[in-house]
Image: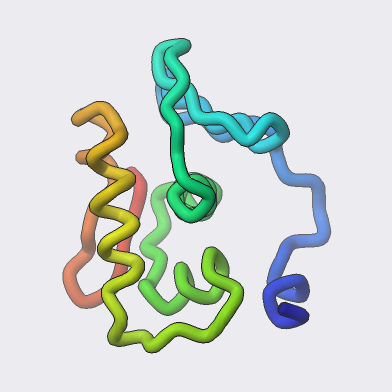
Amino acid sequence: RIRSLLRRPNGMLPDRLELDDLILDTKAGRLTVSDKEIPLTTREYALLEYLLRNKDMIVSRENILDHVWDNFYDTLSNVVDVHLKNLRKKLPKKYAERIETIRGKGYRVA
């Protein structure tokens, strides 16, 4: 838990993360696309927030586990893949496709 807190940035983080008309309101804890709210689980929300905060950067499965899951998970576990699959199902196709799987490296929102 302490390691997780130490990894968080000290500066102010934006209250809204945007990708075209996809808006993640971090203050309200709500995702909207074209003014329509999309319900997410806590993990899906945290996963999308982490990917959007690192937009255009490749983030490894290990980094995702460290930042989204505060406990220790086996890096061979498919927990990240399962949550990403569920997240992609909930998003409109054009946004689901923007979450890219970079084989052997991780994931990126482009």
